[in-house]
Image 1 (tube, rainbow over the protein chains, first blue to last red):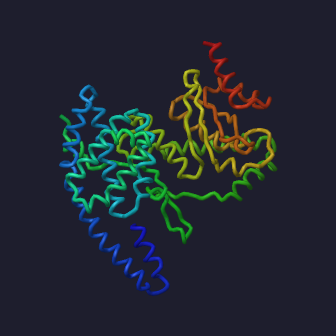
Image 2: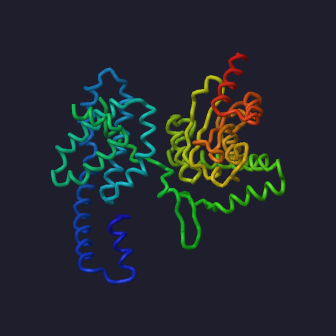
Image 3: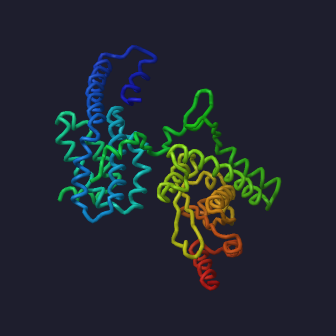
Length: 161
Length: 225
């Protein structure tokens, strides 16, 4: 459930919403339409977003076992799906609890941080090409959250280079 | 070339099955809680846990630890069955085909979501035939009587021995070597073949700490090899 809307529904149980709360409600509804549009865009373009990322990843790690690269790609496709849902719900906790808490140790065990960091970098660049600037602001914080949680602060250095 | 279309053909990409907001559901006002498969869960209030410790101590005296350990073993047997069933159904493959990292992560999340604490598996002594489980913020330790002389998470030790025995197909025993109720940072449990891990009980009664016990266990294994 959308936590901001849920909070307003909860408040409206005992009395009418006040003007400021109605204004907030309208803002969330308008924002929800934008979020839904972006959700549909990301869902429909999943392959178009990830195929160039996969091709560039293969070029970046030519010696690496393709199965390992496929595994990392699948993990980031999953991250993207959960991030998209979290964006629609406007709920970063959804991404954190439903995926990242579980995936972090799995990625660490695979010791594929360099691949994951590169993949994240390619994905972020690809999204800038596909998603209009205004909408990018809706999904970007969630990808940053995924990057920080999964790759830690070391990835910030790698991304910067 | 990697085909993303092939990778996404399987539209189901699962995440954290044991995420608390998804796993624990129910009608809180009616006092009913269940897991995401619809199986009933029970909440054990702290006062009940304390009463179990106190009641067993009064009724069975020194045997209370053994009683709780055996309850834990029985609990762990069913817990393992349910865990394997739920995890393989959600991830759509038998646990035997899961990667160890994924399986362990499921177990950790499961432990945490059930409110049993934060679970860590230490495989440092694996080469000597021992696994060490560390649990912090254990509900079992928090409810244990204060001022005891030996670790008190008997039920937890029973659950672990049964769970890992079924997982490995070997009869493993589990001995707790450090306990939050005695002021330790975390609860440590040593798992190993019954006859190999058994000497730890005597060392524990001597007052040896976890590190010393692990060192001695490893040395005894080295000597045998």
